[in-house]
Amino acid sequence: MVFKIKKNNNNEIDHQNQEFSNNEYVIECKNLNLWYEDTQALININIEFRKNKVSSIIGPSGCGKSTLLRCLNRMNDVIEGCKIEGEVLFNGKNLYASNADIRLNRKKIGMIFQKPNPFPMSIYDNITYGPKIHRVLDKDILDKISEKNLKRAVIWDEVKDRLDESAMGLSGGQQQRLCIARALAVEPEILLMDEPTASLDPIATQKIEELILDLKKEWTVIIVTHNMQQAARISDYTCFMYLGELIEFGETTQIFENPQKKLTENYITGRFG
Amino acid sequence: MTKEFHKNLDFLKQELVEMSKLAFIMLGDSITALSTSNTELAESVDLKKEKLREYDVEIETKSLQLITLYQPMAIDLRTIAAILKIITYLYRVGRYGKDIAAVVSLLNNKQPLSEIIGIKHMWEHVQSMLDDAVDSFVTDDISKLKGFSERDTEIDQLRWSIFRESVSYMMEDPRNITISAHLIMIARYLERCGDHACKIAEKVYYMVTGKHIEIT
Image (cartoon, rainbow over all chains, first blue to last red; front, side):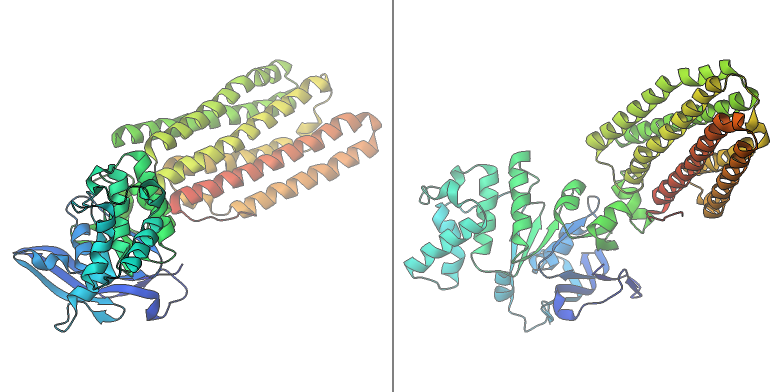
């Protein structure tokens, strides 16, 4: 057992015999609270995500899992009436500090959404869009970035002969892998995925899942999913949320085989939610 | 869907209880038939083996169907995992009953030495362990499993006691050799049934707590 969780009341609950030094955790939330107007959506969240691991966030609709994910690269900032307290430490630095470089942090923390959202431009331009924004302008380098990241996302063989064609012509599964390649092109450290296979068929889902397992060799992946079997298949750690609270976080096998909290067990055995 | 799953799981648990009743009747009747030289009762045990096999196949098939259709988790998954293992132990218990019943006709109404050398006493110990193991499965009450290790040790001791006693009878009169040899085997079967009760207890413990234990 290799993780540590902190519960709401700040009493530390150790599910492990040994603790790891802080640099094992690439991103962590400390006493994180979030309100949409008067409604509190996240309640005192304390969680640490480990480097080069896939962590899943599960829970019933409206439990705050997507809200938590969006907090990890400050995507809630643009929502009117949203108020955030607490810290999100990325490599030890608070993302919400007044001097935090949002642009750089968002480059380091990529996001994949439920519905594939390729830009209405060519496949090649989709991949090179980010690097160009970050001032990579050399054609040879951009070519290499394009090939490298399309290969990373295991879509290169399917699109290498039509890089100039519109990305909108790709299938849903291909578009999602293109979006992953596009996120990887700016060399992030973390990939956040919000139900990345929810709109895909089983074959495309399988490809994305295989890709996620492959991605963790180099990246940390945090994924929100409502598909518990998917969480069980692909993640090393699983976090269960309910009504804005983090109920249980642990190794995926432990959460799904022998959850410690009754609420977790009731949810994953389908007794509610 | 979930209601349907839990309804099916309850049926499955009930079916396992029915299988356990059959297996225990087979073993119990075989001991009664042995001690009373009742060949008719022994034959009736043999006739039950097909039903026992049907339970084994049916429960396994239904368990796999539930896993495939509903991908259960946590306590539900552990329950099905326990059921899949327990049916194997119950099947073996019932089959030992059949094996013991087969001996009755071989003895051909000879003096029921088993009465003398405590096979029935050993059976009562085994029966009580099997009953407690299945009861704990039904009620999720693992307190009944306390002391299983000591009870199993007692059964082991009874087995060796029967062994020694049977050897004495063999030395005493060579005409006792056949029946004594059979009784040594029967004591071995009962001792194995005690082990199966322990294995059932281990699986029930896992089902309830999610933790593996070994009862030795």
